[in-house]
Length: 169
Image 1: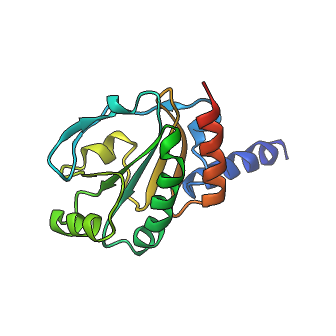
Image 2: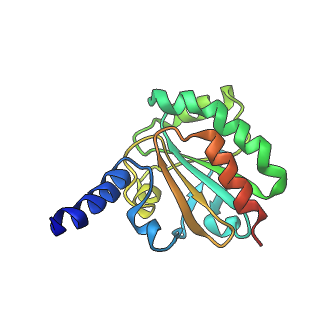
Image 3: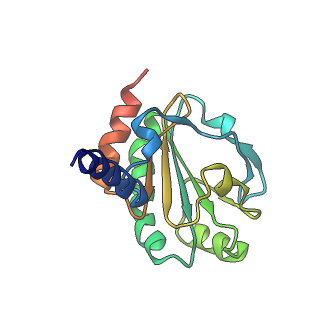
């Protein structure tokens, strides 16, 4: 019986982590976001040092992912809602996504944030072997990963969390 008492909560945590609801390690502490370098669609080099002092949403997506395409208007709206307060977004296209498709998508949808193509898969690897799209990571002003979303997030809850993070000093 004692084994069940210990095992069931542990299984719940593992099930929630697997479902992307929360990360097991995030129960203990926030992981630091990795330092990554990338090239934006316009050819400009950039890296995560530019995120310092901002609340960042890093969204891994693909043009072939119907959920990614469906959530993109809400990602855009979220970016527009909070950008004046120190929030930014980076959309990272997966390595298998043809660059021409990504460029066309970004132009036709007029994405108002930076877009990078993870040609080598290095950015996805550094963020914990991201393989499923969409996967989004919310990073606080101190560069810590606060939340990982696998699948489309609950945008009302995301907005509430962004407000909290922006209010932090």
